[in-house]
Image (cartoon, rainbow, N blue to C red):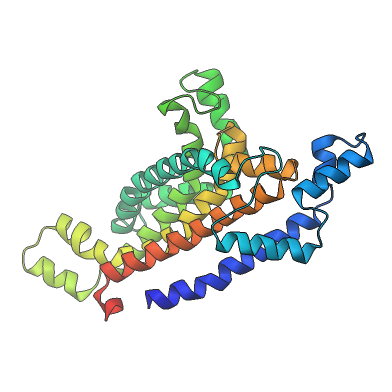
Length: 302
């Protein structure tokens, strides 16, 4: 099953690569003009265009790009004059750090909130969680980020405004990125748990004298976590793509910032490389979710 899933993902990634290649070449603006300026003479522009391979037909460039990918070569950056893989690898740790801390914050908030709301369905905490969830999915990152900066960095001076200067600098961008995920996960945990709490096997466990805490956190959560794992797999990829906005707001030196800089500079190979890495992040996260579901649910393994 997992092998078939991986095989179906190959055309998905190929489609993403093709669309990105087509769209980035449809964007108005010439990378040679961006790099040399519109006042540069024609000879210099022609020489640079030939050096970058931009004088070749589009299909020839596309075939060359796919051939390079098959050999593990993402191309060479127009701006940095380095291999794209080297440029991306220099920014990847910052994005992974941001995504990891955001995921930790989301799970740290969502799991207890979702469990308590599911156990006390209709209660005060459940309604408060619903309000928090609505706020989480409604507030965009480009608004939440500056508000956190104004409160915690400018007014209270507790945390840095922007940049990646130390462990404390990741807190505000991670909260910005993880807030929506915590809202989605808390409602999913709440709904999944409330659906299984009345199951007969849980009543049987209670009748055997198993503590209520163990019934909820061990027996009920084992089944309640299955849809949560599926959503988490989808949202892990969203963390990488959502990092573009959070990194731009906080000047975080990750792939998101690199992608925006590459788009502005018409650095086609870097744009394609960044989107490819984000797409592969989605694929890998979904693959991990499939493995986790098979591990948690014996019926799927059968």
